[in-house]
Length: 119
Image (cartoon, rainbow, N blue to C red):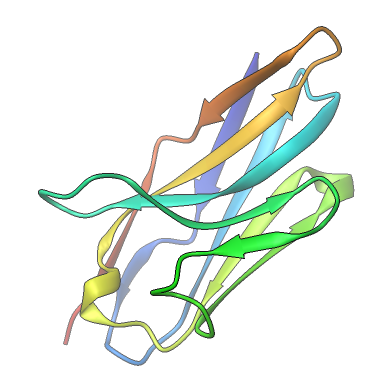
């Protein structure tokens, strides 16, 4: 099994910054993709940013230029630096990972961390 542990959420004023972290542990042979989704009240879960094994990244249009995803391969950890936060960024942010454990690939989710942007 694989566990994803998130940290870094909280309350921030509009225009502020937060940094989310997510560490994968357990039976991790190779991480094929790792990133962040978010879900606001009454809305579907949506992709925020993801980094795949080769290092390429993909961002939602709404966060491009404001958010940056990065990873520490040795630590099986992914980070999301969020700048110029807007009230519309308020949501529960979920870490996601697609992990190859030596036998096959499976998808995993973190428990979610709340990000609230409000004055």
